[in-house]
Image (cartoon, rainbow, N blue to C red; front, side, top):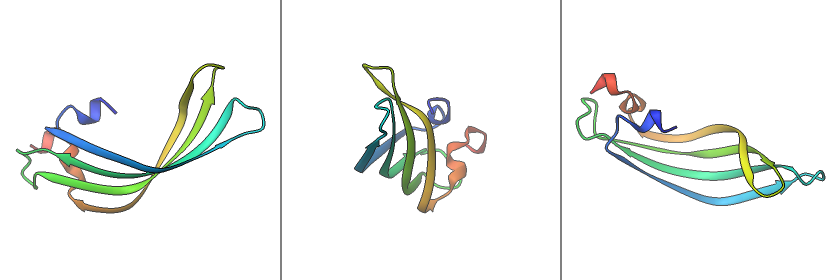
Length: 91
């Protein structure tokens, strides 16, 4: 994720409506989270912003003291702007 954001000027990620379902084993879980993200790259030739709305579908694992995302799938629902904005070679 960090590498994909190196070429941009900034971003804002709003996460809402978290739903977590802990499995019976107590060390794994699934979650869904809504995302509304704005990416800014002022010098990009195709336009300075990209807005994406979608849902994260996460598999979570616990080591007994901390929960971590083991796997993440993003389901895009809507976007405006050019997704190539994230590609520094397009600037």
